[in-house]
Image (cartoon, rainbow over all chains, first blue to last red; front, side):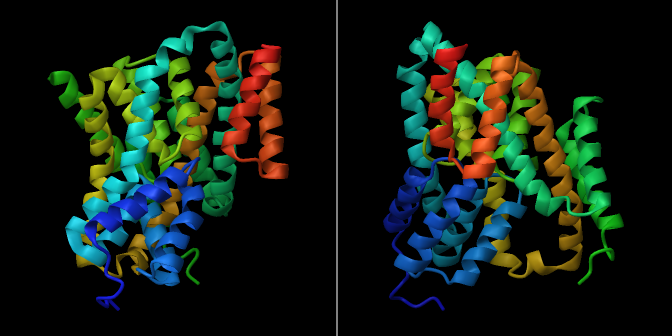
Length: 185
Length: 172
């Protein structure tokens, strides 16, 4: 599987992931097709199946999907050094662009027009997060019991101010104890 | 110095417990930001908007932003590295040690409970941010219009951010 021909160099890993990062606007879900094109179709570093598995694992492990997926692909091809280079490539454009915005554009944040623009954007952000809840919820909360878990998590945080860490732990425990046989296929 | 250590610890914990990617990170981050009084919720939501409409993973963008506000360039680097590290360490271990970890039945059943909890978590972030962002009928109209644009015509975040900014300047 790991033929010499498509074994990437460390600099190449960094650059390919940096390129995907620059082209990804809007987070993990947007990244998938771009990453697949670069890593599977163009470079042939991993297969289609490995790509889907990497992405599923990247989503399932805590943390940032894009960083996790980059780490896994880098690690499979070039070990820990590859993982670090791929992840650094994924993060570098983000950090540089945001630093530029934070350093040079924040003084303009107080201008009335900018304030009004942001007030409009904030309202749209609520909708964006709502959409994410809906699209993930359709797959993740696909039974009455799971909808109850989702509602319980929501109520625990909003009404009882429970730390999300406990909510996550409780969800995992519930899964281990209650969702064992219900959906065995 | 203590501020930087605090920043590292906070972001490392977020990276360790935020299952479900950028939006889950966001809901954790929102609570941490409020708890430490790092910034107002309004400013935090502005950061979300910028993080969504600039390239790269949203969580890294947010971490860079909050880190820079708290500790300059060094703070930005520390926050971004700290939020990424837990996932990277786990991933590397998994890649090297447990090739078939994900297929194990116990792991699968754990995720069946985890995922709906994440949905509730992210919904709570939408709720809490909504209380700050949707303060009048015009804002509500922008929220609803955005929902329709995304659901019906699959409008992307960049177009949505630009359109809602224009709507804000014109109508708010």
